[in-house]
Image (cartoon, rainbow, N blue to C red; front, top):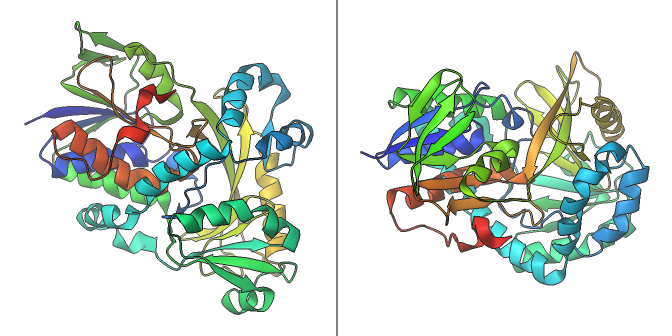
Length: 411
């Protein structure tokens, strides 16, 4: 039996662990934080099989001055962090050419397309099928000009097989009667869905891994001991853990571990926020993205969540919860009759690469080391497929999709 150590207990790490067990491996998961308590805790819950448009698209360079000037913009860069963010931003802009965008879109679509099929056995094993809804997603626009500005993105999705239904303002109101009348146009993505409790999903996967004989330890990896061409042990505050195979799925901290194996990866954290309203007076049937504001309203088991925005400020800067408050203000504009109870605010670190394509696969430098990180805004949507792909690569099975686009040495 192969023994595999997975570093990271977010949704990516737990899907990797669960699929490895399905293929007969013995699994240990290491993470100082409770499973699902980090970035997986507060995401928008979207499951988006056609979301193949990378964040960097043609014309993105024109937006950079706005990001530096407007603290309420959907994407902002803290001035104090700009010297550290600048090299990543330059790579980000280079990734926005049509050729690079087409490459990224093809890689993302291959990983996204089978999301529900790949989740199915994991959800069944974990008893978590009830956490998934398949009601589609909506994008809503205030103006025709804003809709036309996104024409490239919608055409890119269409070319990759997405089903897209354009809706009038009246059709929007028929689908979602609580929406404000300010929205004049919409897009329905009927193939999409959402998770009503992302944290609960990861917890259910973790419980399933434990029931199937896996071990989950609340420990931080401090060092990695190496033999000539492979890892020998990971070192934590609790001691050494011998390693046969190592999978790095540590989210926004993964690049720090990748350096142990000679890899310099341009991983940046795009900090995201949410505001969660308990006991809302009204909720949509499905997630709704306000396209101009770049945030999503998602009906959750515990209330109504407004999630989104991007802030480049690094791993250590304190949260700016004013960004979460802005989300709540905009959410109340989206649903004018909205009221409710307690409001909670949250910030998490999305692990993002310049081309929006995650790193998945083996290290070309050393044996028995695999990577699964950099999923950006699509962690929940790509976790099940990533878990399956990594498990197949580790166990020597034929991979169900081509792993080449996700290799770590592409940068």
